[in-house]
Image (tube, rainbow, N blue to C red; front, side, top):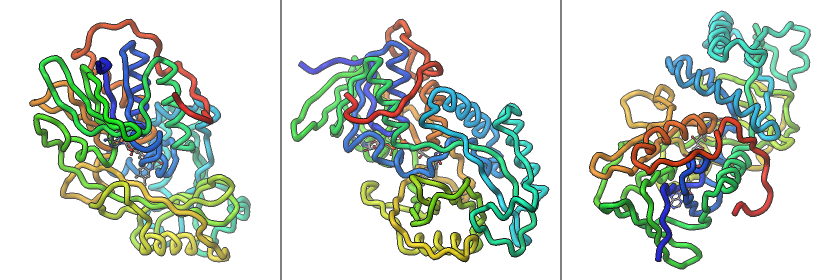
Length: 393
Ligand SMILES: Cc1cc2nc3c(=O)[nH]c(=O)nc-3n(C[C@H](O)[C@H](O)[C@H](O)COP(=O)(O)OP(=O)(O)OC[C@H]3O[C@@H](n4cnc5c(N)ncnc54)[C@H](O)[C@@H]3O)c2cc1C
């Protein structure tokens, strides 16, 4: 006989892990499926920032920035080994599009949205300090602003959240691929494949957190559902054979003025990211030669004296709602989509690593009325997260 759960979640990225943790903490019986490995999808290929997203102020996404800054504060408290503040440097050159007053205005708003806490403070670096900026080019340099945001290990964070869900009683099937979802009178039947063996389970509610596979998974639902139209947008990073810089440089790509980060990562230098439309198999996404050339051009523009080689590279896929405007201006908040024809099937589109816990609370608010009353076990805002080595459950 197949097992019965209140909530089945498909996708062991940060969104699926966060939803599993929140649902288990709320007292529901939970099963979480991941086809490859926990956090091996987009949630290991991000820029690894736990941030409000300074640049989203330009597209007017104040609500997203405020929510993310509040979540940053929660994660700094819950996961001090996994989420740490880092200095961010914004150099302004005579050729930079955003002028010093604009940066100052943006950082002031950012500090305000972050409740003016000590972590929200920013300052303009005195000229004497420019010499300590890892060899940053000084020609045309007008000002350097320093503020703080946080950095994490995205996959380690996803594993820690999954471990917390498992500790609260969630069952993990990994690697296990969900192959079909059928909606019936009293809930859902899910078919899945674990180590070549087919199996089924029942669930009252299904949360589709399959990241870039989200619409592929909807194609396996009976009765058929349409989902939302989205674009997959590839973002690539390079790891350079250069000792980790003192902080995170937030620079403007000379070619198209996009924001690019140059960051410390595992003792080396990480640079990213790009925005390239993608429409292949999500598992096959790779860094393109033109993206590598673009990122190296940015690096050499700002650190021209360095001779660098690329020692690693990775690409991930953003899931952005389809819209007329540029990728840059598309909303970055998670869309929680429900199918009218199939009540109890909830699909998550897009979102940020940073906001996963808040998103999970929003998902809970959607599914709670569809589930039996349960006694909560914990509040995710109080559950510490620690790095986990070894198997998860
Ligand atoms: C280039 C880039 C940089 C980013 N930088 C940042 C950043 O610095 N800070 C930030 O906050 N956010 C950032 N983001 C956003 C953030 O990384 C993503 O929003 C987040 O990782 C998405 O998590 P997810 O769980 O939705 O998807 P994923 O991590 O992709 O997880 C989905 C999982 O579902 C599994 N799956 C799919 N189909 C099935 C199935 N049928 N059965 C079982 N399992 C299945 C997949 O194997 C996968 O592991 C970035 C995104 C990109 C692309």
